[in-house]
Structure formats: C-alpha cells, structure tokens
View 1 (cartoon, one colour):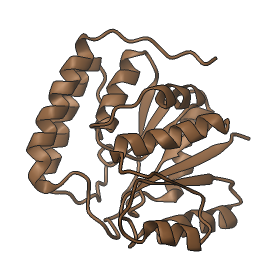
View 2 (tube, helix red, strand yellow):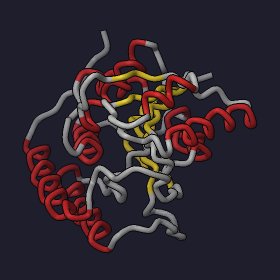
View 3 (spheres, rainbow, N blue to C red):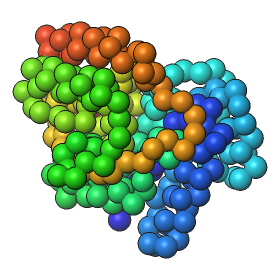
View 4 (cartoon, rainbow, N blue to C red):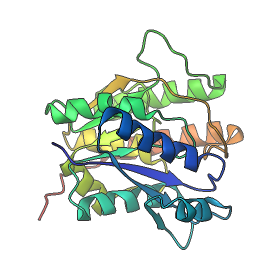
Length: 242
C-alpha cells in the first residue's frame, strides 16, 4: 500500500482549517483509508496556529510568512524526509474535496503519471464558478503552457495535485516562490515527466481570501506568461535521488 501524505498550506485560515482537516479525518474513518496530513502554518497572524494546537492537528509552524511557494515546499521536504510515496496538495480553505484524492492518486499508483492535476475545466459538466477575467487568464496561460511544453494543460493554476516519490524529491530540492503551480507543471514537462489531469469539482472558499486577488488577475497572467517563456528556453534535467 502506498504511503500518502496530504499537504495543506495555510495562511490565516481560521475560518476553515478545522473543517478541512476534520473532513479528512472523517473520510479516513468512513472509507478505511490512511491518508496522513500535515498543515503548513505559513506565519498566520490570526487564530490558525491556536486551532491547530488545540485540536492536535499535525502541523509545522513557520516563523515568517514564506508565501505559497515556501509553504508548499516545506510540505514536500517533510514528505521526502518521512519517505512518503505520494504527496497530495490541498488548500486549507475548503475548496478541495478529499473525496477526489483517490481519483488523483490512481494514475500515479498505476504508473501512468508522475504528477496528476485535479482539473476544473475538463469535465463535461463544469460547476466551478469564477470571474470572467480569471477564466480568460487561465485560458491564456494554458496557451502559453502549450507553447512552452507542447502539452495542453487546461487547469494551469489548480493547487489540487498529486505527486510521485520522484517529484517529491525534486520539489524538496527546488520549488519556485512565485506562480508555483503553472511554473512547476511546465518545468516537469520539460524534464519529460508524465503530467496528467483528471476532472474534479471544487467548492467555494469557506473563509479567508484568495492569494490571487481580482485586481491582480491581469498582472498575474502577464507575469506567468513571461515566466513560461523563460521556461521554454531553459534546459532542464531531473533531480536524482541520493
């Protein structure tokens, strides 16, 4: 049986983190699964730390806010040093549904993929609600992704992902601090890893504020596209475990 860790980065998620973690615990009990979890408390200034401690939720407290890239990489370092076979990223705001974890880890277990993205945009029934500007931005980034890597990725900004043991090691060594989801996906494709998408449904945030603010959508899109152009011209090689 594969050893699976769910990595949950959290910054000021006092409104949702307990519910998110409780759902994982309840799912394990009901379905007899054994998904471990670790919350990366990324220097939260609200009651996130207190909630985690009072409810005995496994977590790492970062002294300073490192941002989404640094927080998630901390989770991958933890996964590597504790010898996990698969790591799954899930947001702490309740958007990602633990019911889909089995679906996104299956291609890795079956050796059909190295990383699997939970995608909002490949299902025939798209229930995800987002702003028009953000949807356009994701489509533009998707086009640049294909230009840079020659593979179409529909949900380029999804933070709901599963990674194999080899990628856990890769991410523990190097992980971008900005725009980590699209950039790491492009870099993995350039390294000839197998990246696939599976359809999932996502929920609305149960609390907190998105790290991609509406007024930053255009700025975010332009910077990601420029970063993808840089990925295209670079040469990459895989990180080999020692």
